[in-house]
Image (tube, rainbow, N blue to C red; front, side):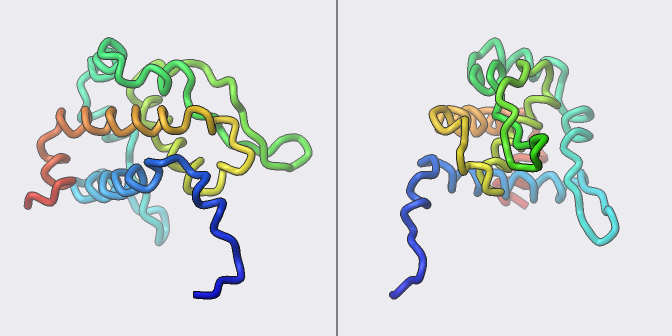
Length: 158
């Protein structure tokens, strides 16, 4: 097949980026399916913070910390893409450590967004993306272990 573009840049993405996207797609579908969704005009929005606040025990975040399964994600969360004063894309790289489960899942979503929405050009997190992805998937696994309804939907066990 003749292409007019190069595919070399695709190979620079973290090795587990595609499985991470698949897990995130299924998780967001599952959250919507169990009712954590709202309409904003014609757009649907997943109510992540509402889910975390209402369905996770207060100890979830402390358990994740104690188990050491998301040390990098918690202590050095993914950079946040911003527009700098010159209206150019940049990254806020020195974010404070996470303090609770809502911030933890915001960081998981930011990681997904950075990877998917092109924030990986000039990526300040490139040396630790594999670790961030691995930890995010481990946190999602723990989440699914805490919520049978969400896990059934995620696994397609209707």
